[in-house]
Every structure is written in structure tokens, then in C-alpha cells.
Image 1 (cartoon, one colour):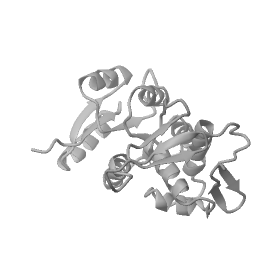
Image 2 (cartoon, rainbow, N blue to C red; image 1 turned 30 degrees about the vertical axis):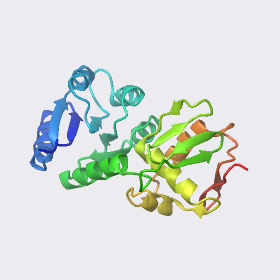
Image 3 (cartoon, one colour; image 1 turned 30 degrees about the horizontal axis):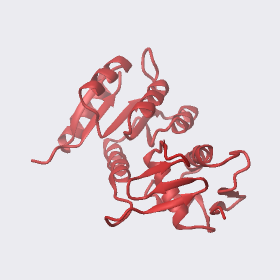
Image 4 (tube, rainbow, N blue to C red; image 1 turned 90 degrees about the horizontal axis):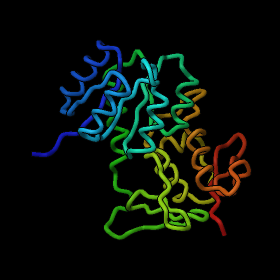
Length: 234
């Protein structure tokens, strides 16, 4: 019997936690729940999930701190759950490495679609074959088959699934200006919404990992009013 996909719901509201868990379980997910940071860590000690739904407004240690801790220790997709008007929280959450977000009150069908989308990005094979495909990106090496970015010394540089998808798209379209709409479509993310900064935030994170001077990027350049352009190092 195939092992079911495991999701961990970190949510202090018992109604939201219960209804979300019941809905995802009815769609064949194996669901674990936690109502605070300590309970989340205890659940992770028992089993590492395939995806985490993380409410940012938790008692005690907040969700942003927990997202940082998750990203440092586990290679697991994170979907933030935020208040509808919490734009700053969403921006900061994406900056610390969350893969996507959904705003409360959310439709359970939309949540399920986002979970499936994040899982597809995390699990999709990049190479299309057995042979390893490695591409030079500045002073680093991007292993497309293993979804890994290595620095000049061979040490792995952690990437979220969305960061990897963006980098894969850039190396596949060198010297081409790509708009935010194109980047979101090519990475199989949701279509761009007005004032949606998710692409800009991910690119800022990639620059910090790839560029010698992130404030003066040479690899991923901004084309004002048009989008971004990846310029391979010569």
C-alpha cells in the first residue's frame, strides 16, 4: 500500500484546526496537528511531514520564529496561514523561506489546491532523465536532477522549492527578460495579483545566495518596468 502524504497543521484555533484536518484527511492525507511551537516540535520528532501548514499568529513563540526554525532544520515545504490584512507578515514569512501563503478565512478547496501545488513543486523531477544535469550559476553549481545548489567548495546552499523553480526557469531562459506573470506561470505558481511581492522577495533571497554584491546584482538583473533577466557569468 502506498504511503499517504503527511501534512502537519500548526494552528491554535481548535475549530480551524479540526475542520482543516478533517477536510484534508477526507482527501487521503495523513494529518498531524499541533496548537503551539512545542507541540509542533514534538510532532516533528515523531515524523517529518511532507508539508507544514503554519499559522503565524500563535500563542507564545509566533509562526515567523517557527518558520525560521523549520527552514534551518528541515527541507519541508511551508504554507503560511495569515490574517487577510497581514501583508507585512506574508512578506516577512516569504523572506524567511515559506513556499506559499493562504489568508484567513480561507476556502478549504483553495487550501487543498495550494497544498497540491507546493507538493508538486517540491517533488517534481527536474532533469527529465537519469543523467545528472549541472549548470554553472555564477560561482555556484545548480544540480537540476537533485534540486541542489552547491557553492564553490561543494557545500549545499539551502533552497526552498519556489527558489529552485525560479532558478531553474532563469537558467533555462538566459538573457531573456521575464515578467512577473511569466515567472509565476513558468514556476507553476498562482497568477500574479496586484501588489503581490512574492516573486520580488524570492529573487532578493536568491541574490543574497548567488551574487557577490546583492545590492548590485550581476546575475539576476532588474529590468525596470519589465521584469527580470538572468545574465550568465562569462
